Amino acid sequence: MTAYDQLATSILDGKPATEDDALAVLRAHDDELIEVVAAAGRLRREHFGNTVKVNYLVNLKSGLCPENCNYCSQALGSTADILKYKWLNTDEALEQAAAGLKGGATRVCMVSSGRGPTNKDVDRVADMVGSIKSEHPDVEICACLGLLKDGQAERLRDAGVDAYNHNINTAESHHDKIVQTHTYADRVDTVGKAKSAGLSPCSGLIAGLGESDEQLVEALFALREMESDSIPVNFLMPFDGTPFENTWELTPARCVKILAMARFVCPDREIRIAGGREMHLRSLQAMALHVANSIFLGDYLTSEGQAAEADLELIRDNGFVVLGAQPDAEETAAVSRDPEKRRRGAGTTAVPNA
Image (spheres, rainbow, N blue to C red):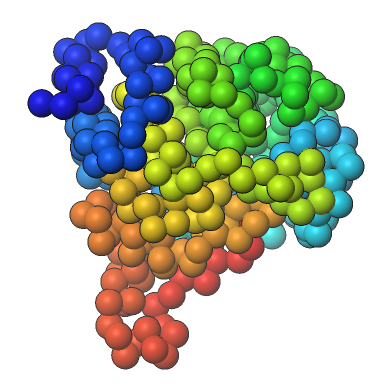
């Protein structure tokens, strides 16, 4: 039995991973990568079986943000070449959400740029949520609108929102190096507001921001302490026109070890492979699925992901099934197995940019 197997057994026996355990996983030699994944995979299978939660992102408002997050293409001061637009209307949001659901997603993440919503913005999103849920009553909706004011989380909950995403992004000890227009405490406060209102808290991190190993561990343990139900793990995409445009710190193996560390630290939480998956994991995306249990389908906020059908193939080919998939979505995905139909372009899920 390897040291990582012993750690997994200890965690399954009810003993949480320590910071030293997490550092050992993060610093595992690349020769041990298969051992790390096999051990972390035991925890994944124990809590999530062979299911993968598929999420779809609807970008309600793009760019025009007054915050100076150094990693973000939408931030104040960014010269990144991105699409900028004000709020989608309800019909547009509904159309995009429906496309994601048709492609196999069961959770729609409704995201807007900016410091935080006005009460009018919250009402706007509430109307969108009502329309989406009236046509798709089983869909899970997560809102991500920035810093919340008192009462806004309750309004979203009453409208039918199930979860609220607000990432801490990095360790408290590293926060001020990546953004100065809001504090780490501001982010924690918003997660607390969502949780207090009865929304499922969703908060994660971005790896590759110049943080140390210890700071990655610090961030994961903060998320465990916050009881984040869903932990998106993003890998920095160094957009041209941002302060991090030339920052390349990650390898595919390190990304897998970061995901494995998250699984050891938070064994029963949803670990989602988020932004930068295709860019940084590359050919190890399949291996990462044996550790994580959730992905985004298709595109991200201001960057393209791989084709939605390729994501569904990735899931199927590795012996996993989409959590809560409807029969029509499975049938749509299955069409791609016919080579002749694939050559004609049939059976692929055309998902618009989010």
